[in-house]
Image 1 (cartoon, one colour):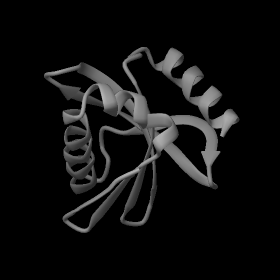
Image 2 (cartoon, one colour):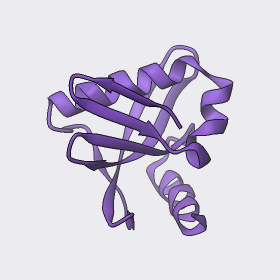
Image 3 (cartoon, helix red, strand yellow):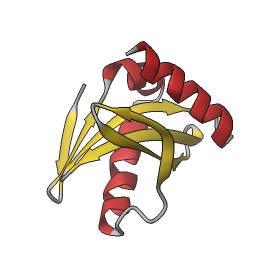
Image 4 (cartoon, one colour):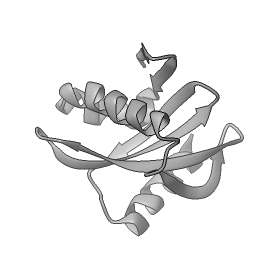
Length: 109
């Protein structure tokens, strides 16, 4: 979808998994980029593996993003060096349910 580059970090949004959520809440995109930049500065200390499945042979991580307009959302992303790919976003906060949604999304694509 769109790429934003800040502090050497490239963030790309996967249209299929993010478009709907970002269309409803345009301000969320900059909040996600800001959160991921902060995570990268701190070696992704608040990120966990989202699933055992892989996306283009890269492990998939997840973290929570808090935005005043939406509340909390959970996003799944993959990283390859300085590039981060935001694959999927959801307002489902329960880890088990989010993982099920994500695995269904990965299976389709």
